[in-house]
Length: 201
Image (cartoon, rainbow, N blue to C red; front, side, top):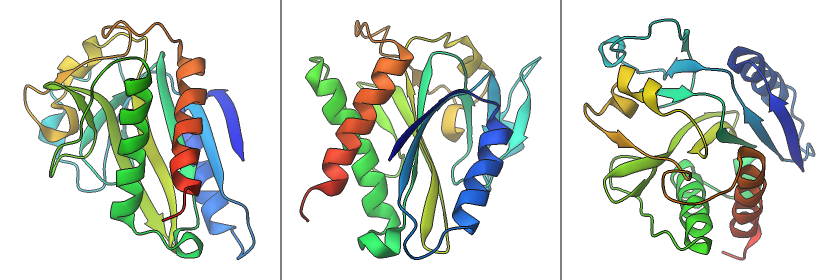
């Protein structure tokens, strides 16, 4: 089931994801949440504060996902897959691969070549990051997910070392000439991910 949640505060969605995961039973159906957040920097579990250079008026939130620091804001499509990995026979690396491949295939439909990088989760167009990943697995169930930059102000990324990499360039679908809005891009991403998730392995 895909749920479109609109624009919600990051901490609100984080608490909802935790509650959903903790309340799951063996037969609980998996869900995919599509959401947009107001401006916020989030720091992963092992995130190093020195990667937050100048947060200014944008709040900084400690998250329980993996990874370092990233930015969420209006015009970004965030997809959170809440999956029972045990039931699906999926490991964390396999899930990361599916999320990255969904973004890569999505961009390919618009004529843009994207790729993943070894030891740096996410999706890149040339040397610029277009999608960031961060996951948490609890009770063999996943939450958090992928943030795809669609049509957004990228300036806040200059206030951090994105995902812990100083000088990491960041781009968006808008910069790449893809005219989708956040809602359209989120729906397309969810469809691409579901096709990969449900494909025979």
